[in-house]
Image (cartoon, rainbow, N blue to C red; front, side, top):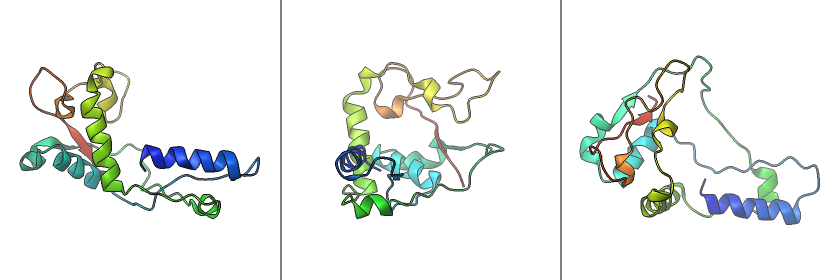
Length: 144
């Protein structure tokens, strides 16, 4: 769900919802992690290295099969998702490429399942986001 769609949802909630209402904000896009990883690789222009860039990791013992959100009550208040998933992802990637220097080292944020005793950022690089230096390699995580 694109960030501007979420911001508009908050605006609708602020102005139209009754206090105490429980509302969900979600899109109508059910996409696997693997599909997201592949689309990111495509947007970044690395589709010829797809197999090299995707690393499968074991599921967490408490892994959820899927997450579904029903935004029906919010839609009844007049909100709807405006940005398509693919356009939102492209716009987000372009924004991060443009402003990548704002974030410093993001290696630790890319660890699949952070665990005690595992070095943060082990085996993960962030060059695919346009960061300077290092080798041109990234680990994109997905499920099968």
